[in-house]
Image (tube, rainbow, N blue to C red; front, side, top):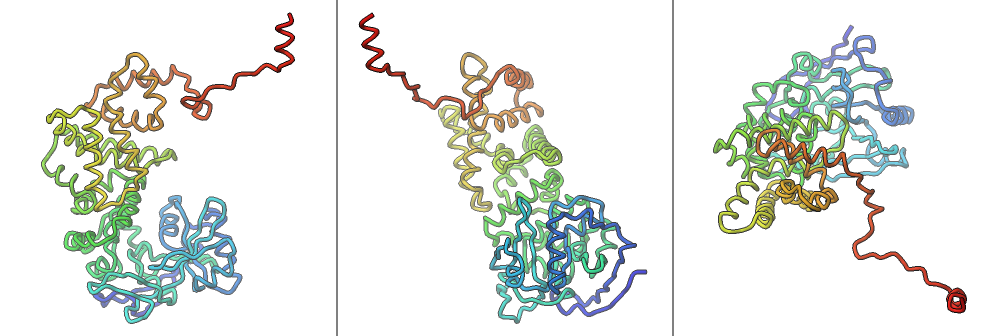
Length: 447
């Protein structure tokens, strides 16, 4: 039987009077098994528990396990302070100012450990702006406080390693069954605290195929403009989470539906509202479909490629304008790429190493039309050839280029034996000539 306890949500953000009910699901009433939890996460949970601290899996890991999915990572919540966690795990380091956390590394896996927090604006360890945005939140509390300061009900779920129960503090299990994404507390207040929650709502709705609850959805339209105040570096991280989630197409559709796309890609949003050619819209969607497929196939995905695809309509349009002013094709693409990125980084801080690769992808496109002489071999050895080729073939799939050319390059690659890059002779490097020993030379002359 599910145990039920009632408490007043003193730690919930201002704007709600609702009482929340804690439901405890014993091991016999949920599907989470320790076999489904990574070994590093179990090590962290057991060591904290053995040291006398409370330790729980929390958030997305619990949510996904209950849904029968495989979590991408596991987060731990505890009543141990960050310094106590650091003392307990020598393979850990403390990070963050806004939220003080411990990262514990086991090989390539990192377990994030957070101390239970409470929402306490009056605390000296909590810092808010005048409009209610959280700048710093390091006021520690108990597990009940921690649960109700989380954003969505389906993320306020805990798996307690001490007795293997699932703790549901905000009717999260019910919302999982209803496939509903619901904010804890007043939606407007929660978005003011952290406007990025609106982007998280989009990502979770896309990933889980959930509906955004009505109040939470309406508040997005009202408070979307708050994203203008978010640092461009943070928006870069959030944009990648949406477009590299394996559900990029759905995220893109929801961003446009809830009118948030304009705060991430303002120039592209204005362009799309002018109702461009159907092939351009098909190109964007096909690029996102291909990205999703690579994620599902466990293939690498690059920020450079996704930004190259999303910004291509703007670059192509600007390059055509420059060509009408007597600028040749390659310089026009170069100039257009620089202009578009100069505008884009005002909202999303794309690192230079990725913007350069994106520009390389764009300037490569005309070269795929040249299949004579040595040009194909030179293009094949370009360091970004594969990304440029994939980009070119996506265009061919929607009719922006000829499909026959894509097939030609596919066949050409199969016919070539490309030497590993490390074995290719450096440009200008000549092998050493063997110098004969003087004695050998003398004998040769004597002969």
